Image (cartoon, helix red, strand yellow):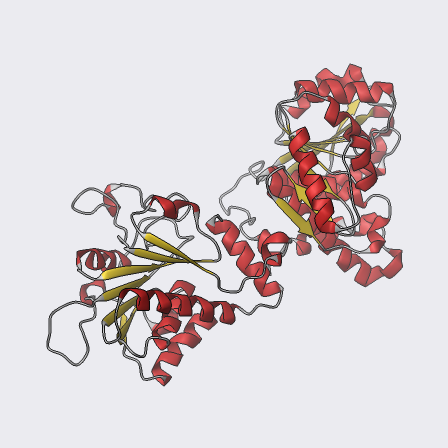
Length: 498
């Protein structure tokens, strides 16, 4: 089972692994054609009603595989507005193959294609709904709305490509709800009533709720596209153009005392990863040094030279004003520090990224907080987990330990492992130069910023990918001279999904 958002990421990751999107569309179209053959004998009339995106492109391909049928392809819109190069190329291929096509830009002109070379008013035997598919929100607009109504009124067998147009593939509900603007005569939102659905790679969660036979077609997406992070994991992280200050996350970094660089690196990384506001709660003995690193940081001094149990109430008050806490960078060890971490996590109920010396306390604490722990393999063992040289074996061990402690783990290594006891993701970005001190602090801050705007597992996976990508760019520029301060400024480019 895979959501539409995750499917989009996997599709992009497959392309990054060298599987051309054109090849995937060819496989998808072939799968649609096979479904037509399952429901109709050669010579039957088939109307393919197509949108201007890749869903329509799948149907353009299918038409080429249905030469033994009486096929008509109807494009809803002008050919020059087809949205992707591969879909446009497959539309042009229909002309080369001398297959009948029709472009409909006015809903008043839409009618399901009648059998070719006849005077019959009978509709087609099969309709392929390739208007929108999955990943579309909102009520159907024209001419799709008129086309959907015509499809539903026909006696044809209806095959939907990926998902019936107007249906949310994640929920099985109409994308337009039941508001009056989208309502038909019966008061329900307009959506295609499909008899069959051909979906790709894996079933979408909402399809089981439909009164339709669902076929899941293998189109050649490699398992690594889902197992490993890639550029597709960055999709959907763009800022809302209407957002205001604070909407993109407020992060509190708690650390410092023995060290000043660690909490500063985490805070700078959180800003570069997209957080609107980042504050650093650190001992007053290092507060001025932290502040001098950047005017972009807001520092909240704590009395003394180490964070201890006496600061729990103050830090808890600050944490309540933030979306995420990054706990541990530069905190150091000692009984007082451990007591603070234990007391804070016992009372805290929000989301936190836990790193460095704070990690070993996590398995001992009964907390309602949602934690993302970022240990290297030695710290993982110190927490009570196990590791292994083989990445897949390590992934299994990390997943088991994540389930045991009830938190998300991002275990750093040559191949990073992200697990929450259910899902597992591996990350291969990064390089040996990133063993230099401070890169883990950059990772903790990056994950903290992401955890303010997305779910905990995705925040960890994307954080690992983006920081590794930034590290690769730094290594290309600086070779063996890479240092942790090279990374934060490279994060914005590393987080682009291009």
